[in-house]
Image 1 (cartoon, one colour):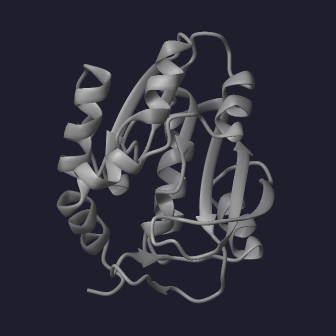
Image 2: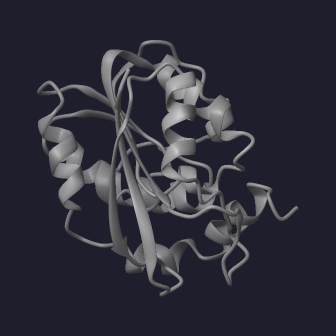
Amino acid sequence: MENSPEKPIAFYDDNAATYAARERREPVARLTAFAELLPPGGTILELGCGAGADSAWLIERGFAVTPTDGSAAMASEAEARLGRTVRVMRFSDLDEVASYDGVWANACLLHVPRAELPDVLRRIRRALRDGGLFYASFKAGVEEGADRFGRYYNRPSQDWLTESYRLAGFATPRIETASGGGYDGEPTDWLHVWARG
């Protein structure tokens, strides 16, 4: 079960209130950049919305946001914040076609087993309208593994991501690197990936 998405979902179900209380209140700079690259009032799918901070920020700016999360408990936290339904959905259940101007997946696809990520990327590409914008962030690395909480991480390389995005039908992605941290408090190298459908 080490590479199973069940472990991260169980973690977020068990720790939803604590996680939500720690969620940042101000948007990351990349969220602002994402919004500026979309048409006003555009449709956005947020994957792994957590407690809903990013969806709330986008909704306040007039975007039509569909928030989703794989954890029912996190979705409940987001519903309380947003005052609307949050769809409980696994990434592998995404089946929309040409429905969104943008897909925002901040620090969530990093839990998808690496062998399953290409299929999820194809699903995201299919859900985007032509020319739509897709943002995702991943913990950088080479080897898959778990953190001290037992949460699985796929830790892809830039080359692996570039090829996987290309095979999924995206234009060549732009990948930014940055240092940061995470819930576990450990220093982390991040890959911020931008791609057009």
